[in-house]
Amino acid sequence: MKSVFIVFNQANTDKVEYILDTLEIRGFTMFEQVQGRGSVNGEPRRGTHTWPEMNSAIMTVVEDDKVDELLLTIKKLDLRAEEVGVKAFVWNIEQMI
Image 1 (cartoon, rainbow, N blue to C red):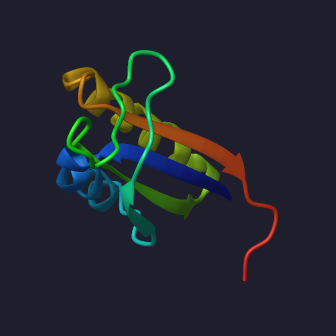
Image 2 (cartoon, rainbow, N blue to C red; image 1 turned 45 degrees about the vertical axis):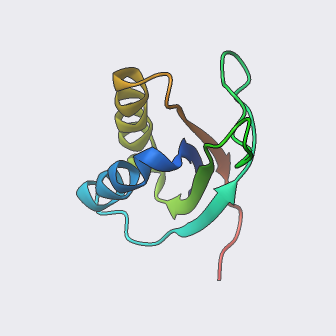
């Protein structure tokens, strides 16, 4: 099993949820109002007057064989509007109850 943590501009919320639905990934936890800044060209997302946009994040745990397709689909979304931004991070899940 793998955990996939997806951070995205709130403008992409519907698109990210659609990707999960399309790939039949049912379980996830959503974190709204996530602040941050991209590591390369990302503008700050702070919810302030100066930086009004905000991010959200979703964490899901999936079978290993779903990870590549999920990452590929997230990458395609990012390439459509790189300035909006979406990133995904993967790590191993050793145990789950």
